[in-house]
Image (tube, rainbow, N blue to C red; front, side, top):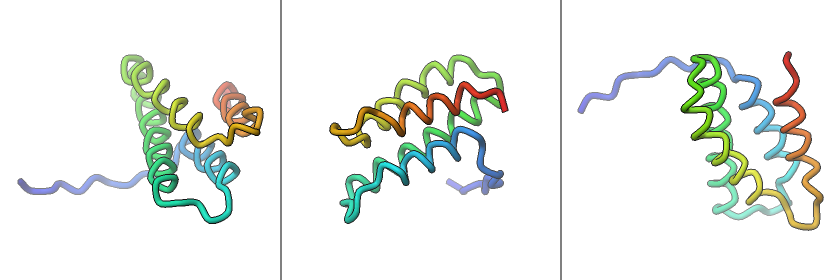
Length: 95
């Protein structure tokens, strides 16, 4: 199978918000499993941006709960979800 290069586009609003959230939630000395979850969160954020740009409501409905689940797994339990709440507030912002 021949790999077809996919042009890289700029980061979208959700992908940027997820990146900021992941960095805010990252403890010192994070393990490789956490790094994998962080990468998955960023990819899901990119998927939300892409689905939104294409007005693909089915894809949004499929991706969004998965993104929220990954962000929940990254959120320390002693935190009251401040970073995730900030992400959700940013998603609601029409900018």
